[in-house]
Image (cartoon, rainbow, N blue to C red; front, side, top):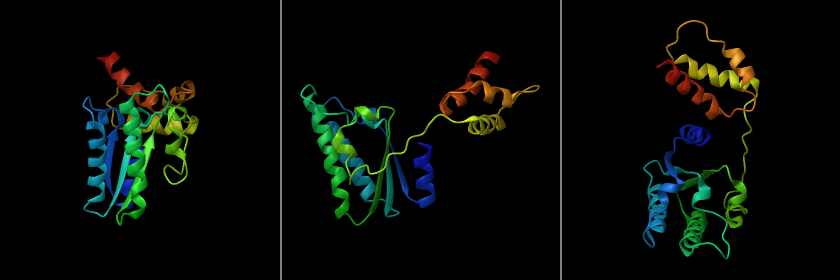
Amino acid sequence: TFLAKIIANESDADFFLVSGPEIVGKWVGESEGKLRGIFEAAKSSEKGRAIIFFDEIDSIAERRSDHSHEASRRLVAQFLTLMDGFEDDESSIIVIAATNRVDSLDPALTRPGRFDWRIEFDNPNLEDRLAILNAGFVSKKTEGFIPIADIATRTEGWSAADLNSLWTEAALVSA
């Protein structure tokens, strides 16, 4: 999510953040309509360039099979159709997606011409953990010495989200 926001900011593009689960509607055709609306909004972006970021893309583009629900298959098909329609468009639209379940994505989504690049983010190393903890620490009111270097050492294998949640947990415990 942060990488997509950085790209949008650096490219001065309009940024459309879409949480996968919020696309799914209960009425026939509702989900497909929401998807079309997002792509239309991006096409008519005031800046002429837009980034659409789908968080949890696996929730709307799961691998199709004989056991898939018809609505799920239609949603994936609509998404693929919209992705394919970009090349004829004069506006500059980039679609970025994130998932923790790459293996559950429909293979048609990851073929060349759709999502061409795959960037994996490993858990932060010691230096990264220290930087993440320090960034979170700056805005906190604390009392006494906080052993951030020791915390960074002890949190091997933690994700950036885990590290950020540490400050929330500390505030709750303190309260």
